[in-house]
Image 1 (spheres, rainbow, N blue to C red):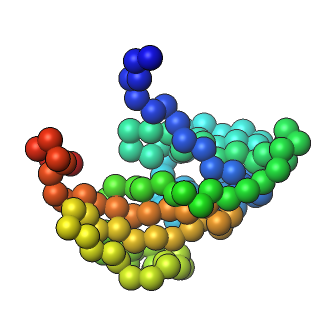
Image 2 (cartoon, rainbow, N blue to C red):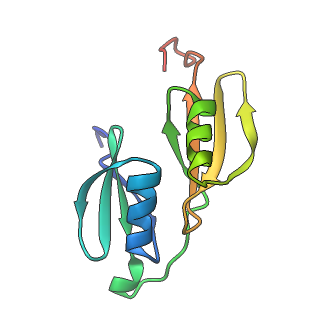
Length: 126
């Protein structure tokens, strides 16, 4: 199999209007498309699909794994979101290769502000 790229990733929601407000107004993501039970947002090189599973008789469950959102400056992005009422879990984590900080959307889906600054093992820069 030859993989070209990831087209979209999905999160589930229990409240489409609340999700729309959070992702478009709080995070500032561009809406690519929207329907009664589904929203698509531009998340850099991939689409974030936010879907209400109850509309197809499926159960809701938040994603604990998370999506790492690359930002130019983790501390600045965190401060911007905190000013909008977003609560973070713990301090910014500084590793030998990146900075990251963790938060959740209103449905409990895990999100990460992230910035890798070290080269990858093969020498490529992030």
